Length: 406
Image 1 (cartoon, rainbow, N blue to C red):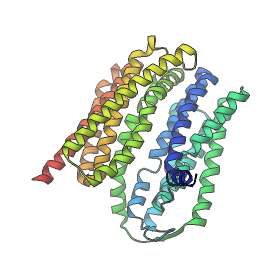
Image 2: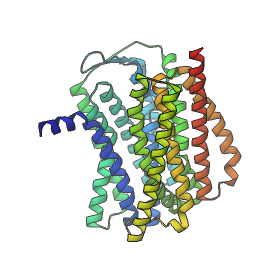
Image 3: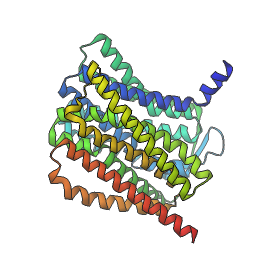
Image 4: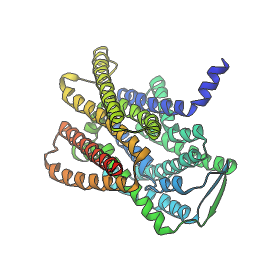
């Protein structure tokens, strides 16, 4: 029993991450049954916004914080005063701008604007807290601030399932209240637990240049991770977005969960040892795993549809499901490449790869924008973007390896 407790405690941060992933996955399925098509569309676009802000809300400056903050003393963090000033400025100004733009283009409602502003500030603050506790080696607390809203969403979904007749406005207000409670409660915990010291350690220009590299990386990942949903809402409407979001949740999200685990585990392996043969063997194994997971998801979706648990009509959506599964397998391949870059990648190689992909993807989107007139064509465009990203990363990885071996 003691060994079991010790094992749970040791891996508690991974457990919270897994619970959070499963919670959002199940919530997306449960709420599809409980909400109208339009309300589920509103829910879909809101969750898409939350996902974007969760990775993009501080414009990459939180990554600079991780890189330059001194954590050599337990429960003491020494960081740069200019960086903290920039973080506060970005948190407030970008938070309002981002919420206003998103409301203007997608919601067009004063009520939703208020919710988006509060949500943006709460999510961005939670994101900063995640990184603060992460660098202080409080991994369980860090994962809690990354996943609390997903767990809260699952609890409200179960409550609706039991009680029924709850509006989308109630769900959004509940989430916004959760963002506020945990983010500002987290600030109190931070100041009680960690001695935060601020001093002048870096030149502002260096901080900005450093953040710009992370900004480009986050921007490109946001484009291929969430851009399709924004495009569909704008061009096809909320109901079609809800349909697309639901199917993507079933056929892509399980790969995303596995992608996070692969990235976490394999980076350590590649730090210990890297060779082309070792890498290619890993790629072969991950593609076999992806194929098996694809067959499993197709089988489960068909069985779930037959018994009425899932709303997946494979007679109508089979090819869309197949494209989604291919996107999922592509994400696993990218997770492996990203792990290698995280382990042995040089700054110049990563910077070059991000700019190459950004340039190619912008040209591709402009070239194919006019023919993306159906859900499957939009999903195909996203698949092509993932393949381009994999090829660009693969090219730059082996270019760096070959140069270093000369």
